[in-house]
Amino acid sequence: MNKRNLLLFGLLAVLYLATGIFQSWNLAFNILNLGLLSAIMALGVNMQWGYAGLFNTGIMGFVALGGLAVVLTSTAPVPEGWAAGGWGIMAGLAFGVAVIFAGMQIYQRMAKGRARNLALFVLLVGGFFAYRAIFDPAVEAVEAFNPATAGNIGGLGLPSILAWPLGGLLAAVAAWMIGKIALGLRSDYLAIATLGIAEIIIAVLKNEDWLARGVKNIIDLPRPWPVPYEVDLQQSVAFLDWAARYGLDPVTSSSIVVKLLYAVLFGIVLFAVVWLSELALNSPWGRMMRSIRDNEVAAEAMGKDVTRRHLQVFVIGSAVVGFAGAMMTSMDGQLTPGTYNPLRFTFLIWVMVIVGGSGNNWGAVLGGLLIGWLWLIVESLGPGVMSVLTYGLADGVLKTHLVDSAAHMRLLTMGVILLLVLRFSPRGLIPEK
Image (cartoon, rainbow, N blue to C red; front, side, top):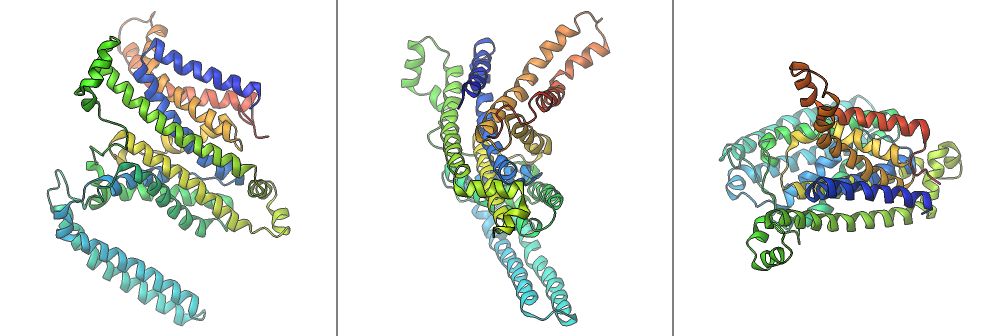
């Protein structure tokens, strides 16, 4: 890194330190953890856009798949749900996959013509109704069992940290399916496909109660090792003695310790992703990807399989985003499908990449940490700032409305920051070399 980049990261560190000193260390570490997760997501998007020029507008869906992986991995199985219809659900899903595979075989092996079209029509229509006949009764039976607290089949009951690579795997599989369909077409088709698939994923999470309880939400997800629960720390004699020795409040200290452990875990993952990304970017593979991004026709003329390489980097970047999505759900301790929205998990990640500098891994990290800090600190400081700005106004409906709406100033702030960066540093704060 050059001196300018070190200065930018130094100023960023000052912002986080000032948050802890002048507001609270709980808030500072909370923002830091979300910033670290956002930086990992930004790195994934930077691989797709900065390396290969792929415009992914479905980041939200890959984040949600990471969250689903935590539920499927770490929640305890529900034996009553499995007994009621869990195996029927698995049989229905297996039958649906078999129908799709059979359709692919017919399409590939039969000669083009009316016979093939008729065979596909009969198979797909008949298979659909047969699939629903197997799947629907099993779902109804599972969701009918104790819907207030269960109504699902649960997970595998494994450690939460194992869900992180599974989140990356689920996102990678979804990215492969999207890429196989859309990457051979114009770039705008990829944007449309990823946006649509992301909305479908959220719709499935909200409506398929047997999977993750839908909008009833999954709560009390286990934490990853070695992060303890605050209440356990507050009941630990050793921790209470340590807090008393330094005159610290046990409740506040326990929350800070938990957030600090999360920051260490997330920092290790971020460092690993940056290190691997730098190795890839500066390798022959990385130079090839940038050559494809800059001139697909010339790269294809040199014998490069452009579509295959696009699929490759699209899957890798989506896997990184899914990995970070699983980490976020592990930290939150709950899966709430209603919280996944395009503004937070698509638009904001793109702002991070653009502000930081697309094509530069350290730029993506800077953008993730900076925009993550701004996104949360403006919400925290907004009411106070608005109270100062409206000090001269008489008490009434207008003043109350302005103060109550101050948290939404962060939307205006993001727009202003984006415009300023695009005007004075159009390639980002840390441009690509």
